[in-house]
Amino acid sequence: MYGLIDFFNIFIKKMSIEKSKLSKIDVHSWPRWVRIVVKVFVAMVIAGVSNVVISTYGDTPKMSNIRRENKRLEDKCRILEGKISSAERTIADLKHRDQYVYRPIMGIDSLSIPGIYSDYMDSKYAHLSSDKYYGELSRDMWLRMDRLMRNIYYASVCLDATQKQAQEKAEYTTIIPSIWPIDRTRMRSVSSLFGMRHHPTLDTMRMHTGVDLTAPTGTPVYATADGKIRMSRVMGGYGDIIEIDHGHGYATRYAHLSARYVGEGDWVRRGEPIGEVGSTGTSTGSHLHYEVRYRNTPVNPVHYFDKDMSEERYEEIMKQIEGSLNK
Image (cartoon, rainbow, N blue to C red; front, side):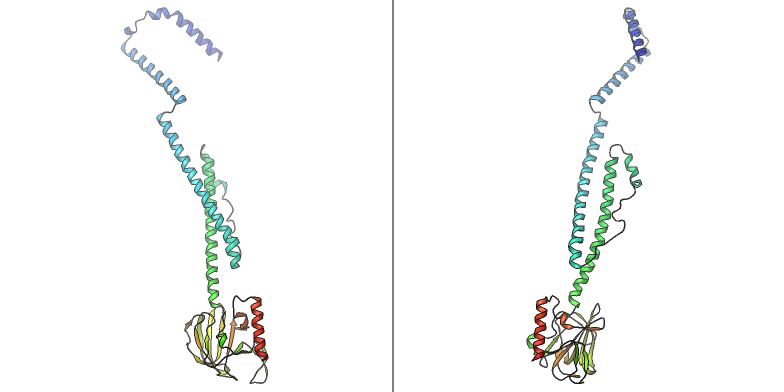
């Protein structure tokens, strides 16, 4: 560095010594090509100095365009980041409602998909880190977008499963027997409960697979749930009998009828009249023998008379039944 300074000092001294000589030189006497070279050289020096000054203290048109383009990219990134954040909040809300509202209400276990919350390997985003200015930003946004897509997939699967369960739950409400098979205002009494009993005509202890509801002959009998008529005929001690297949393992039987309104293969709705109370088959009086079967096994029909029955209501019904039996 000091050698370079000394060189310039010596050069300046020589220039000052030769100044008088140079002043006497007539530039116009120089050859034309020399003058052109000098002018080009001076122009290049001026242009170079101007470029340095402008680049240092101002923007060139190219740099100005680059800065404007960078500003547009930054604005787009901020907008995209805002949309990603909004989508993340929406998915988080859906996930919360699915796990803590919908599934507990319908008794559905939480869905587990292995690896759904695991990020991809860093090698997937390696090419994004090479950008000096936007590498980290691009990597972060792509990482969040990948997480968002996995969460969207998880939410979609959860909602599909929840929707399916909800449809099945809605179907259950129509196929499970849940009303009285005859109008209770026309019912005289409950002459026999579900369970072991002394048979009134056979004079022996036998299992009674339903309940006997005493009512006048001709009293309408109603389907207690939606279903397809599996049987509508005369069958031994049951007399005129109708059996409805409700699906999902449930079926109901209505026996000792005096009339049948439906035939095998017909579809009926809950509350639709299907026959009339009678005393056909092995019977000692006008009544309806009503059975509820689950997977071909008889169950106590009283438990199905009201699907939303409270404990107090159940006890009240049982007292009414016991009272009618003691009369």
